[in-house]
Image (cartoon, rainbow, N blue to C red; front, side):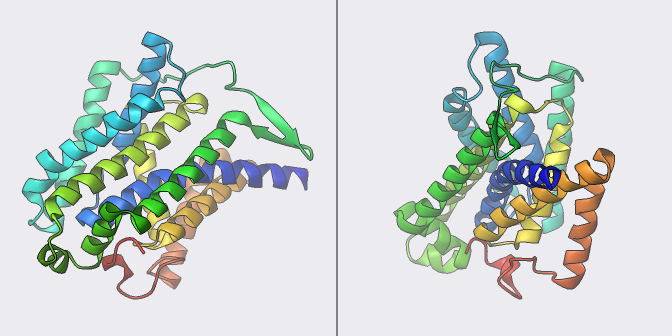
Length: 295
């Protein structure tokens, strides 16, 4: 029983970070209407940025968020302006090929500049734990979960109550009507991509105290983010959060009771079965949700 509870808690804590990364992808898709296959490479970039800030300047990974967040925000906005905007009106296939190409480019540039070494950050608290009812809780994972949850709540209130957030929701509902109502759609595309990338960057920074970064690590997070977003329902922020927790728990139980080598295969199997039974996702809003964006 203790082992089951341990796996459950570990999975939930990791699932919160997965949800944070996936919500960045969902936000970008909902507003800009592009499936970004370079999303995981954004995570990789943030992880490397956090690593080098610590390695070169001794900056604590959590303090580095102050630098990582604005850098990733402007990187995402620049990516949208330079790469995405010129292909905005092209076919979905062209958008997919473009983002896949960017993904491969970023992987190979990382290999050139930083080699294929596995890098991690060792801090005084990297291995720290607290014991609650015989359950060992990793301090870095707990901090990552709490920060991810707080960030998702802040995003929810931003979208719900600010004028910029309402404009983003209007674009999600109907791009053309929003434009007629005076919303500067292109400007808000930049905002959405910047915010989505910043959330992704925050996830990457939070992972570094207990994870390893290498040039192809982004591929794993791209696949994981797509599984979470589709399971949660394209367009459902709350669904994405719950799906992130679910995938974290499945991964933890699979690695603990089956095999660490098969944990990805387990949640991909559940992903395929879920799509066969409920194509709109476990928490989707029904037919057509994939065209709605954030609800």
